Each structure stands twice: as structure tokens, then as C-alpha cells.
Image (cartoon, rainbow, N blue to C red; front, side, top):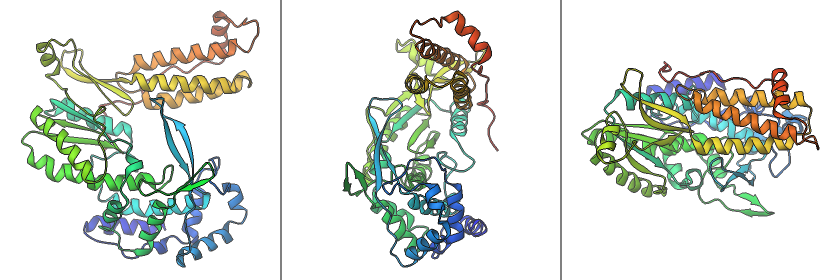
Length: 436
């Protein structure tokens, strides 16, 4: 399958108007077996309660049966199991769907096919859920637009519940620009309409992509490629007199403009554009703000102490200066994200507090390294040090509560940390090192 996908990618790149008429046959036994191997083994099960280990006991026969059902148009995805998880930065809960294991295999195969085709079409402004691109790349490019281009105004936009409101009819129309294989389109359509199980009842899905599904990120990117990326590139940038740039990570986007009038105009046009495709802009979270090399000067003129800030990908961006006195945009961990992460860590440590000290501290050390890998970015050292200090306090609290006498005081805790140190942060990401 890999060789065929490489060929498909080459054809898609060479001819952007080419449609692919024969793709579903790529989902054969060997290809699906590779997808099975790539899936994690410790994930929650869907409504069928089938795990990877259980499916693997009769893997070949299961996949042969699956392929035969797909060829005979008898395969139908099962409804996803609906559960809810807390949002990281609010008290609301986010719906999450857990697909059946067999459906995960098929979704991974379809996602590979779609990625091979659409990676050739996606624009450089899109960063989320794409190979060889990540959130740090988006932050670096945004930094260039603000510091090195003529950016004076920012539109910080938020799409309300994007993955829950993707219009199925429009999505299928977008897919038909590149895919003319009715079998593959039928499979995707069945995943969209599979529904979900909640409290023992099956509920339909007339909009949105499968929550928690492996196919959702690529479908979301395809939808926003046509709704936002191409529209911004072909219309907004060409019609506006000043400079205009967009950086999008999944449904999170920031747009940069030279002139306030054009930033305000884009705000209105964005709302209309999203309405056309049955999406809604969150007006309380979307804002136009002065941001750039003249923002501080303009703020003082208006009687404000500091320019406004905006949050993007877990960081609060603010106007500052270099040691030489030149304008710089800097980042620090978003206060909401930090508080949410501390709350999560507090609950997690509470749940494992009765395990061995070495086991607990090993998990804490690994968790901190993971946190550093993302948040240890240029200019954010102080916020990360604050996070580390708060984690030390939480660890101390739960170790101290293991003793009824609470004899584990802060002095003894410092001795304990010599044996089980919490890693110190170091800058992992240089905001000025762009990926080639």
C-alpha cells in the first residue's frame, strides 16, 4: 500500500485537477493488517468491547471477512460509544466518541489514502494534524509574520464547536473535487452517519465528524481547506491592499493585517463565510486587536498601559522588546492552560498517591519532560519554572497526606527530591529556527 500511496501522491501533486476513480481496493488484507499493527493496544474499547489483543487472536480471518464485507457493500461502521471529558480550560465537558476496534482499522486506512492525496493540495498556512508539521511550526511562522512583516492588527478567531458542526453535504462535495470512487465515498458517508450510543440509546449524527475517530482530523482539514484556506489565499489576500496572512492549526486560527479597516472587514466577512457553510463564529472569543511594532505606542496614546494580548496554541502572545530595544513578540504559557494542567496533575497524583515513592516520582519525571517538550520555548522560562514550583507543592501535599501525623515536612521533602529530583526545564524550542 505504501508504494501505491506514494504513486497517488505523485499524481495528485502533478495534476491538482485530477480525480481518483479507484481507491477503495487499496483497503486490502495486507494494508489493513499494517493499520492494525500501528494502532495502540491500551485504548478504550467501543460498544463491541473488542480490544486489539482480542481482534488479533483471529486476525487474518477477521480481516478477510472485513474486506469481503466492504467489497460486497455490507460493511457498516458501528455507532461510537459517547463519553465526556473535561475541557482543559473550562468547566464544560467535551463529547468524545470511541469507535469499535474494527472501525478504527478501516478509518486509519482511509485516512492514509486521503492524506496521500490532500497533502499535495493543503496550503502552507495549515499546520494541524499534518505529517512533519506541528504547533511549534505554526508559532514560528506566526512569529515571522508579526515581527518581520507589516502586521499591525490581529484577528484572533474561534469557530464554535467546529468538529460537531461540519456539514455532511458540503464535506462530500469537497471530497468529490478529488475523489470519484463511489465505494470510498460511500464508506466515508457511512462513518459520518454511523451515530453514537449514549445511555443505551442509539442517536443519529446528521452533522459533524466522528468524535475521537482517526478519520476526523483529515476530514476537518479538508473541510477548512475549502472553507478558509483557499478563500483567504485566492480572495482575501488578493483583494486587500495591505498585507494579510493566516496561520491555522485545525480549527484554531490567527490572521494578521496591516490596516485596521481591513482587519474589521475580514471579521465581518469571516462571519458571513462561516455562515455559508453552516459554521458559527464565537463572537465572544473572536476579536480584532492592535498588535505589532506600533501597538505599544498606540496604546499609550489611547491611555492604555499595555497593548492587548491573544492566546494561540496554549501560549499568551504579548508585545515586548529585545535587549537592544527593538520590537519583539513574546510568549508565555496561557494562565488558563496552566491552571487546567495543575488541576489535572493534582487529580492524577491523588489517584496514584498510594503507589510506591519511586513509581510515583518516575511518572512525575516523565510527565514533566513531556510538558517541557512543548512549553519550553523561547521567552517562556519563567512560566515553566512557576509550573514546576507548583508541581513540587502538589507532590509534597500528597506525600505528606500519606502519613496521618503529616510528619513529612518541607525540609524532609527537599532531601527526598535529592533522590528523586523533578527535572529542571531547559529551552527546547528556539522560536527563530524555522523548519526547512
